[in-house]
Length: 85
Image: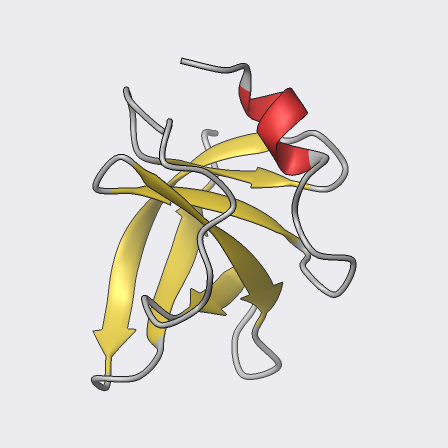
């Protein structure tokens, strides 16, 4: 498995980070509807297929978070990062 920071460098410029879901790595975009919410689509080109391990979000800032799925409308999947207190 590649380092997630190396994979993050391959994300499209428009992406705010990457998400590891079902061992695939997708670009994510910040949602304007909720704080700490991001969305992605399984129809988007994957950044990598080497996302083995824990399912996390890595933001362009390098911050790494676990997440929970909030909504799946069939086209876009909305997730929310879980901030550890």
